[in-house]
Length: 231
Image: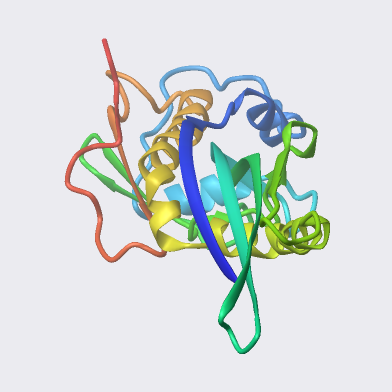
């Protein structure tokens, strides 16, 4: 039996951080201190940031991006008789299904923030895929093609359907797919840090104006700023 796959990319989007920002700050509301705040330094910025993270559960994830795709799987089965001399035809099973891949970092993993002049460099945890991905079974389409001397490929369709979840789990963690959403996730992580800096009155002309994000699974810090203050 032979299995083939085609993929159609529909969209890649960043996660909405509004709800998560509310989670992060809901237990830490305080009145703003009078006067201008003292600008963060390398000595205290990581500790201040980590202290602002929620203490709800070690497994709390910060979702940074999603990718919705249509995956198409095809399984074929050839049948011959009389020592392979007579071809009874080939059965084909095909399933197409939309899938949403979600990518996150674990909030309680190690974060490190650095300051360089008006720039904050964020060393974020490794980017991870949520598994298994969300399979939209209500939109699944099945197609079975019967060979000329064969029964309907019902069993072949069932076998193909059983392969979908483990196959998509591998797909979600494939570095090539992860890299498709990496820049989107980087911008979402920068926006997350910006929300925190803004709350601490450390973002803008009197504070920091650039954020650069590097995930732990990346070899080097990207050269270009991830996020800039727009006056």
